[in-house]
Image (cartoon, rainbow, N blue to C red; front, side, top):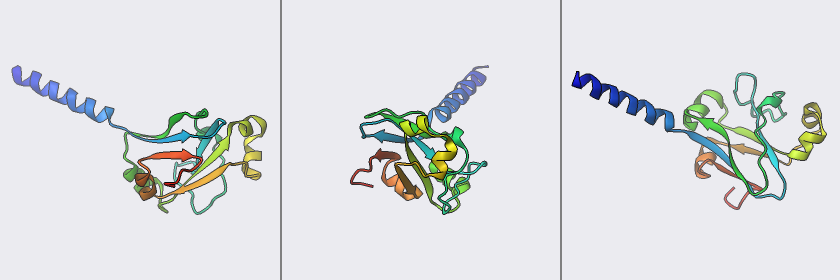
Length: 143
């Protein structure tokens, strides 16, 4: 019986460690206005680069990132290496920065058709690793 208890404790501990480990992608908004980010992919969550048209999945817009705030916009329990291997066939992930006012003022189709973006970033896995998975907006000297 004692061995069963020990095995149970070990299994719970291993599961807890696996569940607590995450791979976030964060954004630090150094601007004087709030922004949203949009990872450009298709309906299967696969990057569409080198096509740089903004895809039609407005539900993938990040939560609002206030001025001077840092927030996680993506990531989870899967490593970015595995995400790139499965979902980023070109090794380039496009991320668009959109002013919060634009989202309030324009429809998603207007944002897409008129390219109402502040900045587009194209990141390889190595780029994200070099940035320690923290994107500065506006881009810092390290970008």
